[in-house]
Image 1 (cartoon, rainbow, N blue to C red):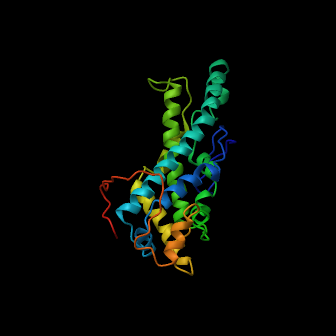
Image 2: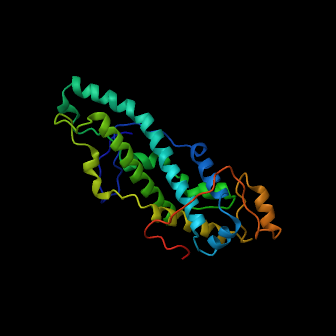
Image 3: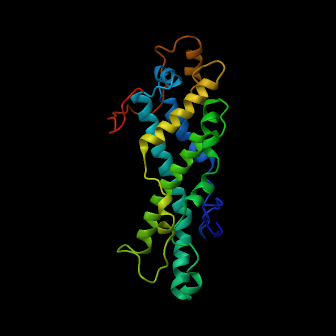
Length: 251
């Protein structure tokens, strides 16, 4: 990404010199599909009423965790070779001419550009229910981007110097925009996804459990009134989940 001057006042982007990959729907939608398929019918019904059960929470938590891992891996795989090249250039050329360049780490805006508008439509596409951009999808993108940036930059910091950044290296962007970084809050992230799904259910004029791609058998069973005993079958093993501190079950 080309380096741009930052300005909170005008909302300008802070981007590094690193080129980041475009994360495609093909990379993330399978994770969303598998986790939504694993939510049982009775939990979908409660979710439609704005209530998050332990079972639904565990699946959404797993989904968010897997999404973070996938994006972090794909970004790091692309930017790590670039950082190695920049390190060589910095070591062999005049470092003074590069002091205004961000090449040792990624920024949150880098990651946002990499993800794009995925969270504005992914849940709607998987469930077959129209989805629009919302406050929740915007905040979810910000939280995902902040955590991915943190993970990628921690990995790059180890690459640069396992014992710590040498004095010859310029200041990284991590210290420049750390004030806007958001600590990883899994509960908040899951609640954002749950709110999006609840809105999708309520906006559905049939007020049905959405027909998740690959789970059509369950969807038909729900619409025929067999939802009490119906379960979406997947290859995911049973999740033995202990609720984290701060989660109080059904709201």
